[in-house]
Length: 405
Image (cartoon, rainbow, N blue to C red; front, side, top):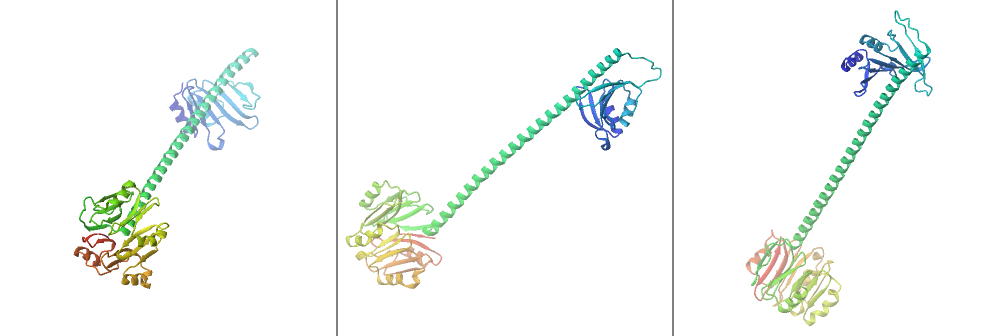
């Protein structure tokens, strides 16, 4: 009996390569060097049986079996597959052609004078055929196990690839959602910055009733000043709150459940304008003023407005257009001047006691006359580092709300 490592070492020393090893069948299959790479030798190392597969120049692919091979003979076979070891063997010609023919082939040894009759030869052929069948089955088993391992390996690789692709898909989806969230946050931040730039990020006031007024303008859409010195406020979500406003205005807001509001303005004499996000509008103006407003207010969206004495008013619409009537002469001149056509008006205030007015432009320009503002408000209006966005002022009680950046 040979030892497997011993056989491998011997084969390697003669330049052969181990193709596979079946521990169950105790067979090792070796391949000859590249120039005769189709020659193979199968070593059954526990029974010391050797099968060689060679390409015969005349008979084609031929398989030779040798039994009871010594280690020295095995070395000779590794060196030359056709060597005669002095052992009896049988040759199987036309292997794989479909026409298998087993021929007796006896190599005589010294003193070997045994005579083989036909029956003995047939028995030996039968034994050889059984051994060859066993070898073929073992080889088929080796190939079947190899195919099974290859199939299992291919399945493993496929599952790993599918798992990897699924993981990559999940990661891409996570990154996409994360990017959408970031983009949403960027859009919200940009929109918030745009709104604050337009509205003013800071508010200052002097009120008779200032309880619960917002201290930050981050989410405050609109502020209104009540004739009594109170206020009303609309947040970005359309909800509203107020303190000390006229009863008729409070009733209108209550009927609307203080929801979905967009803009409101309270005049000094109880007149008002209320605009909802769904397009509904409510207003109450002195008789002379209402005729001028009806047509425009029913079709245009109001950005802001101001009321003064003798039915005077100024209103700016969201489409950029504006309308005014009975305003002080100086304010009328400013509004009609060519220099004002390329400037954006962001706030107008009209006096209810005289010809006083204040007009504020988006570029920071501010002009007022005919009015004496409280010192804190005055200092804000003339401060060159401040951009006023909205001015609300009640002369009767000197209350005010001013928004600026």
